Amino acid sequence: MRLLHTMLRVGNLEESLKFYCDVLSMKLLRRKDFPAGEFTLAFVGYGDESDNTVLELTHNWGKDKYELGDAYGHIALGVDDIYATCEAIRTQGGKVVREPGPMKHGSTVIAFIEDPDGYKVELIQLGTQGSAVNPDTKQQLVSQ
Image (cartoon, rainbow, N blue to C red; front, top):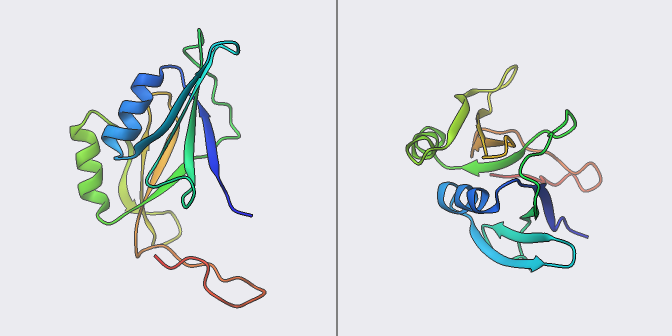
């Protein structure tokens, strides 16, 4: 098994595609309208779906806003230079809602940005986060 995608419902698909593709440099992998169901699916990511986990952006026609609720947390992206990334995002009109710095009670350097629908995206400075170990094999699961 492997994780295929995470789905986010978006109010304005074009704004969301601009954010994820232009601001976060993802690629639009595929997009399809479903007229009978009155929705559009757009898949974006950093690589082909056969090898990478991607985001599914779902736009339900006629629905332009969602209540995010309190169960959703965030998606996370690893970045090489969190300070330059935040500045580039800000320059392109993105909203940085937590400036880069160490996480509370830890040393991982993080920042948070927000997409057009209010979904949080965590940026993690690669090389500063801890690593997890598989208890069965004792092998490192994350090594960034």
